[in-house]
Length: 88
Image 1 (cartoon, helix red, strand yellow):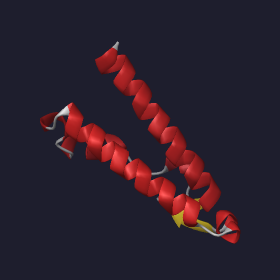
Image 2: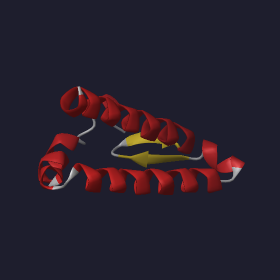
Image 3: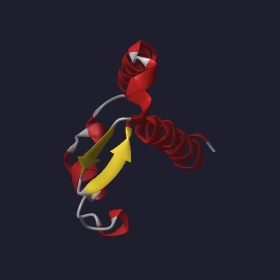
């Protein structure tokens, strides 16, 4: 298994092709809210024993619990980018 630090996953390529720059802030905000709600519903529905399950994504091993933390951090990162680039 490769190190997660060496993972070939690069999000900038996805972001460049997403078309987000062609959408309104209101539309992006609505989508973010819907995805956040769906994510919270999914995480709340997991049984206790699911949180320690392990799997591999992008060549890196993760637990379900670690993915929840990564999702939360990713969301926080994007809020900070919005504040710095567009709302400051």
